[in-house]
Length: 343
Ligand code: DAH
Image 1 (tube, protein in one colour):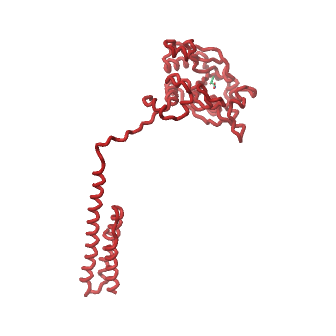
Image 2: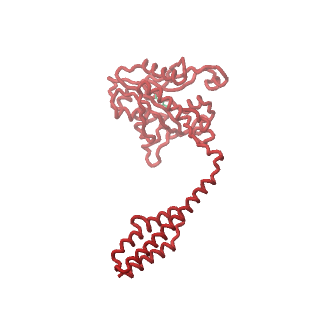
Image 3: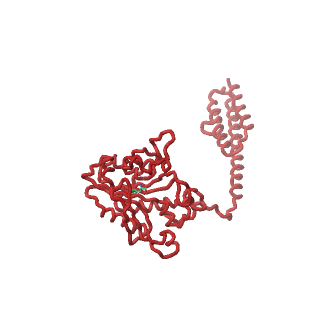
């Protein structure tokens, strides 16, 4: 019986002598396996009660030897690995210039969009976000756009190939229909987002761009309320002192208007962007057509409202003097980096 226990101790000893951990992790495994609290040496020590009395002393000495060999091997290797780690640290050139931390920049379209959102939030509008893949009803029918309206033309609208009832929204006005069919007045929302039209891409137009839509519905909302709200916006956004509303046509508003802000004619650039008039067209607006309210389940005898919609890219281009809309969609960091300081 005793001999087996001696054999076991001797084989642990040989094992320890023949293993050499190669790195700090392996060394830790070694420690746990042999000299840890549940390690092999502890196990061997426990075996002493099974050893015949006349050999106990001899066994004790053997186990002590196993322990010493393991411990000294561990201590020696540990020192070596620590020295190696120190050497790696010493190799670092502390005088070398640091690697610059690349800071991202907000996209100019986001900057302008956030400013617009901020201005309307201050007077109680809340952001409504909706899907870009819409159905024909929310994008056109609900918005009082007749079947034969040119905006529905296959040339302008991207329809889904496998489902012609679905399309990429052509304007954020579709959000009006989404909100009116699910919320009770008073409604006061702005809807920023991406829209799509099948246009030839050029310096001035793209097949994708962004709009911000606004909608206000309550009892007794008047054209004067709309004028005042949009005038406030023009002042905050452009510092404009003068705005003008020109009669226009949109299927979803009656009456409809386009709003211009007075930009001024101080330099050549002002002449160019205002075509020599000093006025800049910034948005379309109007009183929500009673038919639209009715389509969306809101009683037109009780409620009235106004709505507006504006493009973002053109405003970003004006603000930053960007001459080609395509820059805004190319994700060229050399271009985007220039807006680093913008909020
Ligand atoms: N949806 C129009 C467009 O894409 C913009 C617009 C005009 C929105 C008048 C409105 C509005 O809500 O009342 O050109």
